[in-house]
Length: 86
Image 1 (tube, rainbow, N blue to C red):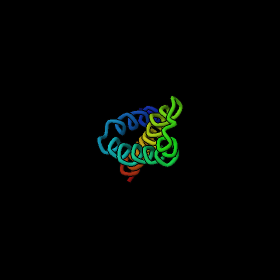
Image 2: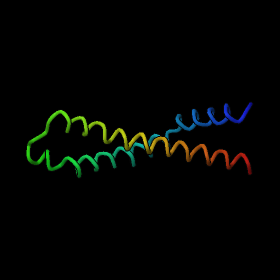
Image 3: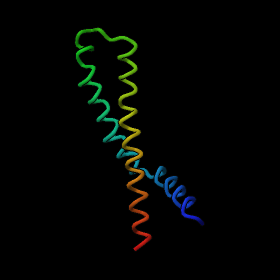
Image 4: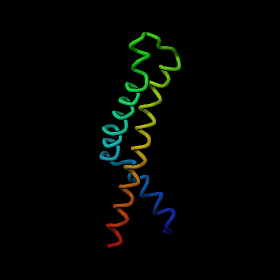
């Protein structure tokens, strides 16, 4: 098996790990929600919520979740590679 297919297989395994998804949910999603509250809270408080604000309410947590998901999966792959090399 070549290195590229091995790495792809490791990424697929990483994305099947419960711990990777839980880390993304705990860190990424909650950080995204906090970011929405900080950045859009004044609009909610002033009752000036429109479609753009609602879109930001949905998109911001998804961005945080995706970033942490990729980072956690990459960490899992890296650790797995280190363990197999030693």
